[in-house]
Length: 354
Image (tube, rainbow, N blue to C red; front, top):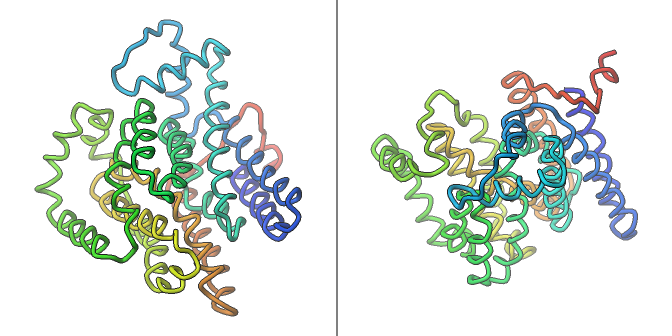
């Protein structure tokens, strides 16, 4: 875990310096770039976290690749193009890490309030680990996160076109088309109430609804995963962690609306995220969709703390969140998953455990 602790400390300190140096643009950007560099290097030169081995193995077989428009053909062709540049499987990990980390850090910096808290949550929530597991979907989610600017401008046609063009990389991104019409609505409106009520009904009637959903997923890339009942799912603690930004946004809804009119998108995305996390307690498949939505939590919580609270309340929440998120990180990643970092190139074990 030395690599993760190193990343957590260095990126937090860099984020803090970047934030307090906002009036000195070059210094702020430099430390934001330092965050990117640290996170990128850890991601790019890993060996076998999650599905990394499977991705590297499939990459090594691309010498027999034949173009096809079946499944997520966009990512297959993307791999083939990379293979023709460099056939070393590590090259795939480096490039996907460059895209994923690059877009995510850029977007967090673009929307930053407490930059250091954003990146702290990015790591301690387990999202950083997820990006090294679901490589294909995480890379796409990072790019799609940039589409938030399209939602803000309410350019429906452009958003739909952008999502459709992205779908050959991972078909699951198509869920963002119906989601778009929800998140552009005002937070806590009748639409929000309807979504909550429908979700509650679906949650209580899950045993009846899920078989029909399985049928719909049968011919997709999620068909295999949906039928795996032994792959685990959301813990109740994970549901609570993801519900916190929604609860805070409701409590401070007036202040939030006054200080940040575009917050509707982030509040609604966070609401949809916690709904999927809750359904994830039934089946792991729902957690894969949260890869698109959870990023909005990392912007929403720091903004609320910075702009909707004052004095002691602000400091209490700030450090309280840091403590709670670290506790969650340790409980889930260290105790639960026994997460280990291995790299042929970065020898953290020799540095921290010599």
